[in-house]
Length: 248
Image 1 (cartoon, rainbow, N blue to C red):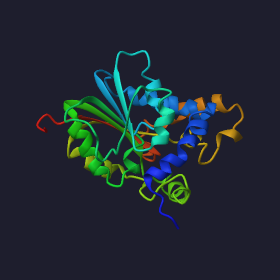
Image 2: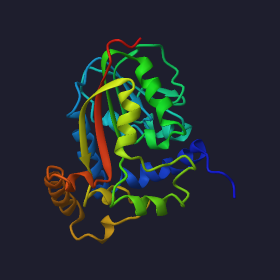
Image 3: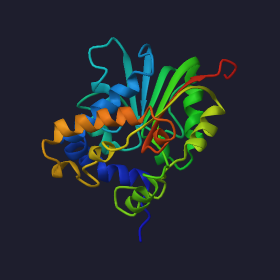
Image 4: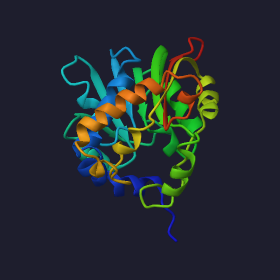
């Protein structure tokens, strides 16, 4: 069986992201909420890197703001779609970022680290190109009781490379904490989360009044995210961190 590399996998799924994941109204409803939730944790100012930008949907949420946003992705086909939304795009590997030290004020990695062969290298690179005191926000997989088996089964499909992984929160905290002061950890994604991935399994098409139902499930998810113990059993986690001042 031919090894599924990350580049070939991302090139393969680019059209699925554009035409299904971020196109179907109920799935897009979830991702728009997710994106706005992410951005609520950071100060959107200065020079911003969308690290692993994919098709560029993060940039849509920043339109109208006086910001310099740069997108980088390892997949050329992803960047073809991102060109519809972003002007400054770079083809590059997030484990060897093609930018100068201290070049950015904010770095966002939306669903990035679990795709990297070595997530620790990816975090170190983000620390290198971020100015001292700059902000980083990563949103990634979270290995929990509800996510472990579904993600293990999904990894067998063509939508995931050999490097795809379901990361534990403690692992994320460990590799981020080497370079950053962790400010916020927010677990998210419970009942509504699977609706956001119709390219993998299209749950939304079975829901009556899919968009209103998605919004209701998001509200329930937001309540669950405040319940001790239960909130830790999420599909995803958002971690906002600040680069340590004593790092170069």
